[in-house]
Length: 117
Image (cartoon, helix red, strand yellow):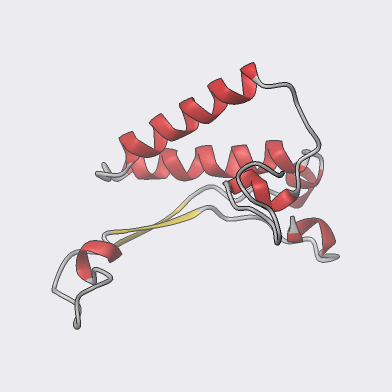
């Protein structure tokens, strides 16, 4: 993660923006008047996040973001929680491999395909 390379002692602040897609869907030419909520979570101090391995830090941030979605009763919260549970179940079954940091969030690195990690 890029955070590991920073020398500054800054906290990570989980933030969700809920409703932006409803206000301006991808194929719409102009935004529509819709409520947009921005919610800030509890900051994670540098001493805490630096002590965590990258996968665990990513999981913690993701869980906190889903908790914020649930707090504002976002329509996306249930799907996010379900996705985390599915990924946790897969991780529990599959043996741990050395993963590239970009794969934490389901992204593939350059030159990677579905069959070649």
